Image (tube, rainbow, N blue to C red; front, side, top):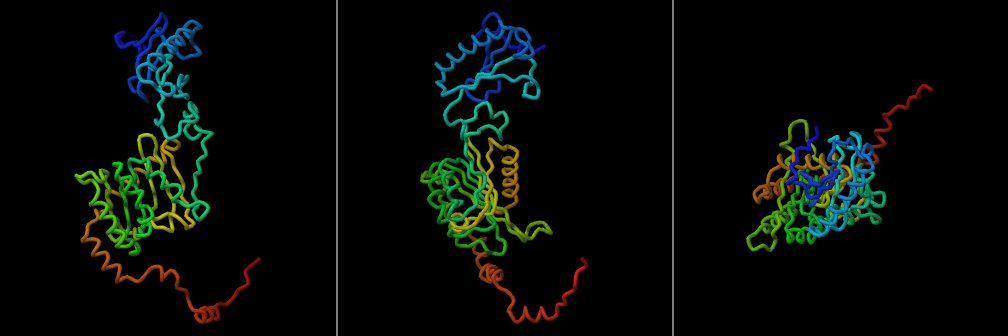
Length: 342
């Protein structure tokens, strides 16, 4: 017995002697339709020549109807044959899927997208941004601010220079109504209090009733000292941009600083939602988990943090310090070389 045989004829949109057409109950686009044989036929290769001709005739009729009603810009037409190909109902049905410009980030590859990673052999995506003057990270992310409805950034530290670099992109996105969420860390007090004050100003200006910035920005902070023991460091860096038609994330080494965006040697690996949905979903889930555990940014916390940061020695100075030459020589005189066995 086939589930398709339970569909009443009042739901048919076209029919002939050997086949009928319906709208798909779970459409992947507006107007998604199915052409189905009246008799239970396992797949296309099991159908008779007459049944195949009947299907083709209905495909033309349904296509004409969709053209008149929806004016699509293209179509994908096809069938699944066998479980390995994704067939879940063992009754021949052919999909007619209207396509519209912008319904996905880059549609080239068509039916090749049944295996997402192999979908678009024409698309030249640079999966790794390596930074420096030849491949600055800003070149990859700034254009995405112009298109994304949702933007999520997690950075181990944030510098005022980085916010100044992306300020116009953020404000334009807020003006378009985008939702922006940023997670910062207080690890080693490297995040600048002035940068957090800037973010708080933007947050308070967003989502206002005058609709100057109808979008919404919110910043949260991960307090390293409050993380469960033995976690005592905070190093994640990820930038994610999302809309109905695309999802793109970069995971790598770029914090929110001008150097990380423009001149630094920073490696960031790109993950596309429509090419690697599992990895993209994991990035999204990891951000949401971190977001839920972080605290909201407020003026009092920033003031307390600023006082604490002023009392702390600069970690950069610690990184640059090195033993004096006299210390190194004294240390070496105590070291006895031993011949290693061959």
